[in-house]
Image (cartoon, rainbow, N blue to C red; front, side):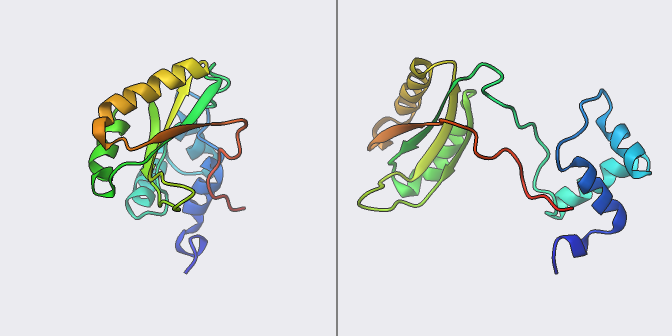
Length: 162
């Protein structure tokens, strides 16, 4: 069964109305409700159900860091003990300058890194200072790291259907 097949017509209209983002108004769910032809309460209840059932993974802001003045965006990559990734991820992910972090497989011998944390700064020196803070937090669990700087935005959207 496909995702579209599991949505009824109202769910489908809600997804189509919101897949490019919620309207930038004081009452975005009211605007979606007018577009779809149901009450705002029904829009919110259906979206809540779609999140609970996994049809929608999350609702969140996707900022354009460049427009906000964050010109240096660095994916910090770390070699940490595999058995500590979850624990360290909780700690690093709680840092206010880390937008997201996750575990990825190593590809030895070329790629020893198994833990990634995205940070954003106004310039490279700010990103490097943030990486030093992460290194301090990791302590001896940091067995090596690097910073991969973004040169352009590749994707800022999720799955779409028409």
